[in-house]
Amino acid sequence: MIAAVRDFANRFLGRGDATITVPSFDGALKPNQKLEAAETLLTCDSPADLATDGSKLLIADGRRLLSLNGGSASELRRFEQPISALCALPGGGLAVALGGREVRVYEGPSAEQPNATFADAAFNAINALALAQDNSLIATDGSATCSVDDWARDLLELNRSGRVYRLDPGSRTVTLMAQGLGYAFGACAHGNAMLVSESWRHRLVQVSPGASPKIALAHLPVYPSRLSKASGGGYWLTAFAARTQLVEFVLREPGYRRRMMAEIAPEHWVAPRLRSGRSFKEPMQGAHIKTMGVIKPWAPPRSYGLVIRLDADAQPLYSLHSRVDGINHGVVAAVEMEGDLVLIAKGPGRILKLPLASLAEEFRT
Image 1 (cartoon, rainbow, N blue to C red):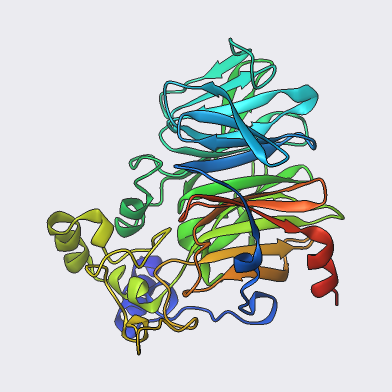
Image 2: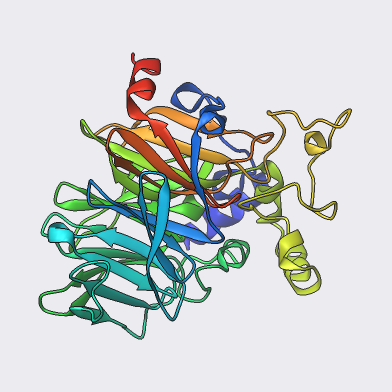
């Protein structure tokens, strides 16, 4: 009863979860254009995720599993469904999520038959895989109702059905670790626990066996996604889109959302996108309209590119941006390899590279 009254008061006064304000990019999140200076290693049709064993970079591109050595890419194999997540395992093994509904574990990228297959009936949108401290697999399942590629609908429907699973290749068991998350998208070992991105609540939570999720980092101005370990301690956190007041306002208008989803093509919904500027039918917000043929970098973003360097306590140290007037938007994966940070900018379909030494020098405090 008390919660219902509080919720009504918040909606009436426009505060709490009902506010349409968005935190600003400031401090460690101060905007720059570092991602626009990144080297493009490869352009793909549908890049989805990255994995590395330290010497070889593996790329999920639609149904294809690619290997990138030097400046050339080769196809290792092709699956019957699109790859939705990758994870490199000790000893050269590889875990692959297919279509968001199945996870296979292989001895190596070229192995014909999997050592273990997880196809739990509850799986629906497996979008990230990570290795836990005990070498089991952690899988984030974004939504119980919307597919991996239908994440915008999940946001607009205000769904909170994301889950986190533990997959044990040895015993072939699946354990539910957390549920009721606002689109779980990305995980990384954090001691005996896991850091998990909760995109629609704009935060990271700490998930531990037998305990309720605890907030590790909140009030982000973006929708966080996959995480990976950083050298020297800490993490890299990707963000596939930035929040805007327009979207926040629409999320609080149920009648408008229902009609929009029923009557307008999905690519023209008022929702975050991995890429923008390709159609005059796209919804715009005041300052996003071109002035003298130019979109200002500080205009409200329909798409954006961002990677955040976190410390060992999951607090931001610095960030790398591709602003509204940039191209490298929709960053969904970032891994370190041989002294470089390698990223996927899914909007333009690019695999990018930035030298870690130059980043450390530039952002040294």
